[in-house]
Length: 279
Image (cartoon, rainbow, N blue to C red):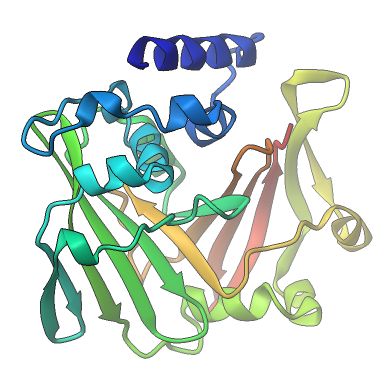
C-alpha cells in the first residue's frame, strides 16, 4: 500500500507540473487519491511499533492523512491526551476519543501570515513543531492542536482552547469580520486601484499583473471565509500588533487559490492587493 501511495502521489505531481515549476498543493493531491490509498495504514497495526510514513516529511501531507484516516488518527495521537480549556486541564483517553476531521470536510482551508516571505515556511521539511488552529470570528476563542515530530513521526500531543484578549476596534480579526460581511464597509477599506494578480488567460503557466477599479472588484470579488478561520502555524509570527496581514485561502480538491493582502495605515486596515491563481 505504501508503494501504491508513492506511485499515486508521484503521478499526481508529475501531471500537475506541466511547466514553469508549478506548485502542487498537497491537500489537493491527497484529496484526489482513491479511498484505498488514503485509508491504507495497514503497516501501522500496533500502537507500540509505529512506522514513519512518506507523508511525515511534509506536515501538510501528514495532516490531511491524519484528518481523514480514523485508524491513523488514533495511532498518531498521544494518549492520554492533555486537553486544556481555559484554566481547566484534563486528559482524553483513547476510548473516549472522537474522530476529528479538522478542516478536511470543508472545501477550503485558510492560512494567516504577517510577511510574504513567511509563506515559504509551508514547504519546510525541517519543522518539528506545528500548530493547527481554529480562530472564531464571533467570539474570542482559539482552539489549538499541537503537533510534534518525534523519531520522524508527527504526533498530536495536546489540544488547547484559549480565550483571546478582548478584540480592539481596529485589530485585524475585528476588521476582517466586518470586511467579509459588509459590502459597503468593504468598499471603503480597499485601496483603489487594487493590485490584482491572476492567471494569464492566454498562458496558464504565466501570471498577469494588473489593477481593478471599484466596478471591476464587484465583478471579480470572491466569496470570503466568514465565521471562523483555520490557520497552520509553521513558525510564522502572526503578531497581533503587526500592521500587515496576509490571508491565504486554499481550496481542497478544487484548484481554488486566493490571497488577500491587507495593510494598516493611519489606524485603518485596507486591502491593497488581491491574488487569484485558481485553476
